[in-house]
Image (cartoon, rainbow, N blue to C red; front, top):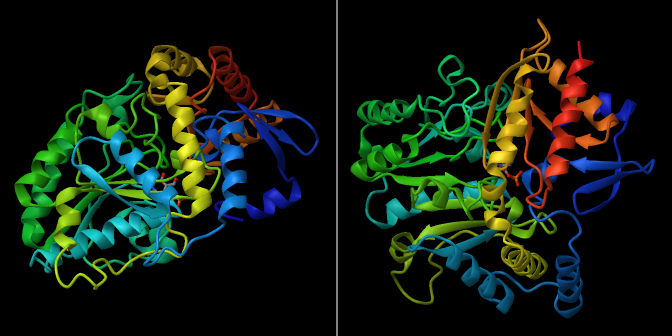
Length: 426
Ligand code: PLP
């Protein structure tokens, strides 16, 4: 099983059999309030009839169309509607099937872009400690997760990493963006001085590093990265697989922070997680750099059998309509204060050493059980599940990201369930 304690699970399986709105239902008939939008992906809530119908209709109309040298209207329509949502300039889309594939695509295009411009020696990528960019060899190399290093090594040559932006002694219990830490972006100058800008293709970061425990960027940090990338001719890639589609109260994190990258990777909320799909958004200058040579030649030697799959495109179009009709891409902004108050009310709960929040994301960091890292959080997760609430844990951090349709009473239920669970955890 993926990222699962297999033996523990098989002794006491947790089986979900149906879902609707904010709730899952287990095989023994218990409702489970979804505090994590599945895996940060079911932004509009579960089994939305409009999306279900669109997938059913598309499956009956045309199941599949070849993605190479052929097209279908759904993919183009979806691409146009998506780019209309993005800041001006990010006007080309490449469809993939997951966040990991979106990251691989972004990295490969960055290399090929520089080569197309006659700077093929720009082959190095700069990621960040505690970054998560999926599970492909490119993603784990630019990512900054020690367990990946131990298990798989670093497969991309020449990758270097910025320091992560979390400093608990300076930032503990910050509401929203921390004041301290913008200077950590200047580490990029040191890395550029070490390797020389002419060897570096791109910098990739999550605007908010979610999977390793919700590390909220310090005020001014992303702005500074943008300035330094421009100064040295590096592409800036925002991995918005989680932050895309309303998680911060704006369509994308690029809107929230007012910093426009050259490339954005997306997945998850793209189709409300109903059909697997990812997307990569590119600035026009990147697309244009490839559009040279004989017109019968393939310009970008890359693609997936299922790029722009008809079912995924139909699901995505229906999802966008739900997001728009219900104002879900900005709803997290309306709930921001209530959410921040609720998660920060856990400050005095047992074992809590830090709390972080931004948009409809929250993290509650626990003091690890001495000698048994991750156990305290995992036990809390099991207890919350028994009590009817799905949370997620990473290390000894509880990460929360409910669907964007969450009601205030449900936020209270999530928080009070965690408080109760913590009270009973060793
Ligand atoms: N990038 C980021 C920022 C993610 O959070 C994730 C998944 O959580 C991925 C990439 C990988 O996405 P997937 O699991 O769809 O491959």
